[in-house]
Image 1 (cartoon, rainbow, N blue to C red):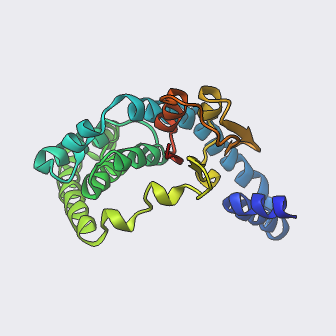
Image 2: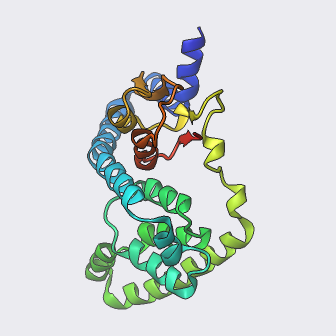
Length: 243
C-alpha cells in the first residue's frame, strides 16, 4: 500500500492524463483515437529531444564553472547579460519545454531571474527560424514590427518578474533533497531517471523503479571523487553531499 501511494504521488500528472483519456473514451469515443494519436506524436518528439537536452545540460553543468555563468547571466551582468540571454533564446532550437531543464541549470549556477525570463520568452516567440518563416508567410514588415514590440515586452517582463520574484522564493538546492541521517541525500520526486549517478558511483546509488536512490551512507576516507562527480553531473541537481 505504501509503495502504491508513493507511485501515485510521484506520477500525479500521469494519473490525471490517464483519467482524462478514460473520460474522453466514455463521453466522446469518436475523439479518443485522434487524441491518442496526437499524444503519441508529442511523446515521440519528447523521447527524441529530451535525452539530448538532458545530456547537454549535464555536460554544461559539469564543465562550465559557476563564475562563468554568473558573469554572463548573473544579476550583476547588466545589459551584457540580458543581450546574451536574448541571443541564447533567439538562436536556440527545439520546443519550449526543452528550455526548462537548461534554465534550471543556469539558475543553479547563478543566472538572474530576469535573464531566465528573457531566455524562456525569446525561445518561445522570436527564434530566428520562426522569424524567417513569419517573414515568408506574413511579410517582412509585419515580422519586424512584431519582433520589435515583442522584444520590448520581453525585456520589460524580465525586469518586472525580477522585482516580484526573488531567488529565495524559488526552491533551493537544499529543499530538493530529502533529509536523511548521513552525508548523502536526494529527492527522487525530481529524478529524471537518467541513471548517471548509478553508473558513476554504483556503490552509493541505485536505480529503483526508474528513480535514483541512495544505498550506502558509509564513505571511505579520501576525496570521494566518484560521489562528487555524480553530484556535479546530475541533470536535475537533486543530490546533496555533505562529507
